[in-house]
Image (spheres, rainbow, N blue to C red):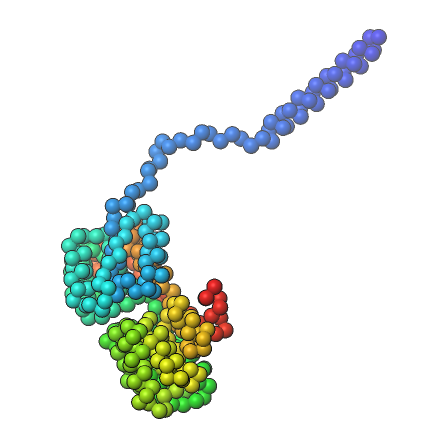
Length: 343
């Protein structure tokens, strides 16, 4: 009996030790409990809701602006927690445009996004904004000799090259005259004309003198119709503002020249895509418009809030914490890929 009790006692002791060891091991394997979160010493998120940034352009309510530029601007504003104002004349009224820029400067907004359209007329008001410490970023249309701090948009010479390449490919060795329509006084169109001509001239095609269509599809249609009737050796037509393509397309259809005159254009809105689907337009060169205002607003915000400094007084030194140019690129839509864009 004594031996049995000793054996039983020893077994109990070993069992208890094993249980204690297991409990200790399980406890050591549990993740350590995190200390209760504390807000002590944490700075509250900065409130920028009173900062106003203004986007301003002629033809401020163009469908492509409302479909791309304006929504992207609002997305950036929401992310940054700032307010934005969208303004500008509803037509190509440059005196009113300049007046609205100057009125906006007087309000001292945190920054301005300006689509220059005619760079020469915005040089003076942008200089006024600079003196008033209102930073300006040009978007879509640049004013390179002004005191804007950054340009965000398409390289229009490259865009012209892309359109020229599409025209040459579609004509496949055929020669003749090519009509050019756009805003002839506008800097970006002039750059695009040059890029386009640099390509088609090498292919033996003859570019005609660019024709002004006032950024109006009805005007573009009338101009294109006249050119079709007066130019028997016309083999192609190229449009360089958003309304050129639809106007040219209408004129070509009415003249019964679909498939006989190659049409290329700028921008890839629903109307342009439909014309490609119909076979009226061969290629449309689209711009990444959403990036204009999205990145433009972020540049302005960083100009106001970035901790980056290059000197003791960057403004006096003429240095600003912003890129000079942001090239947002382009893309080409043809019948081969138009369905992707239509969807």
